[in-house]
Image (cartoon, rainbow, N blue to C red; front, top):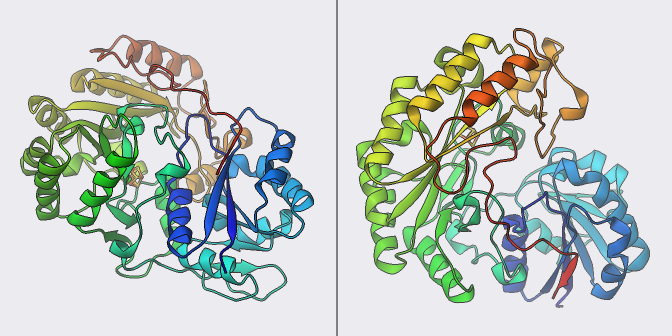
Length: 446
Ligand code: SF4
């Protein structure tokens, strides 16, 4: 029996596209159901969405959200329960996956979906009484187990039509049309990164950490997206880090050149930037790479951040990319735990030497579930209001022990003087200024 599923998207500023919702909507449609999307922008009160929730006439309402949107989603769930009393309510995504039982206790939901959602959500939509790995149902004794999509080539193309415009605000990577090359997690283990924390929480079994799609499948999805969307300016690998073996990457770039032929962007780690990879990127027409360097102090980077590359390798990586004509977006963090004035000088010095196309810096944001957060707790460096903060601060977000805010302000002023500038603007705490995309509206898309 076909059911109508309403996805509720409560984005952080600028994030109009949600790849999880796009993946799940495609999966449900492929199995005979219909879907709609309610977008509730950051500056809109939950109550304003009441008429649209009523109008949606959904059989199932599915919420996907991060911790920073939990309060808003709690209000939306209460409204959905009141306006659609016969509907089944379910939540998934980063926050419900991290806190499934707390989410079920706090919101009037029938179930929480943990981890990857295609099969659990389909099971819930077909029969909300049936147990399934990945579902934690109200009033049942379900374990917090996970389901993994192992045949990633069998997953349908993301449902981009549900969103209309899939460009996010931000740099050129964020504005490109994203296509996932793999399902799973970044294989690196940076101590500060929520992705690493999320992988540890989910504990993927062997073979599930990175499930690479075939080159053919990725290219066919790009061709489909290009036919669907107006004015596609370029694509990006929608993966935390460009995945794949050298051979896979070369085969993809050759296919991309022949079948797509648009600008291409990706995230890389310094260690990935070999001559061989850069040659592949050039073949594919890649013109934009994002790399996180984090600090100019290589000993600190290795010891506290688990980023083991040194400054010489970093400089060589950026030089390789620049020599190949590839623009770079290089990001640093300030206000790191135990940061010293000497570390800040090294950061400014390295940023100056790298001379990226776009330099970006922001204050380190403490995230629960990361290994670095444990160190903060151990040394009493946590400032509660900044934990898991989605937008970043204009001041240090942990207690400073070895430098002052004044030292950070001096470093910031020095970073602002560093060019060159590619027209996207120099880095600021808010990120590089770019021409604004149309603002997100409260909207029911059917
Ligand atoms: S490489 Fe990037 S995405 Fe991967 S763990 Fe490190 S910071 Fe996170």
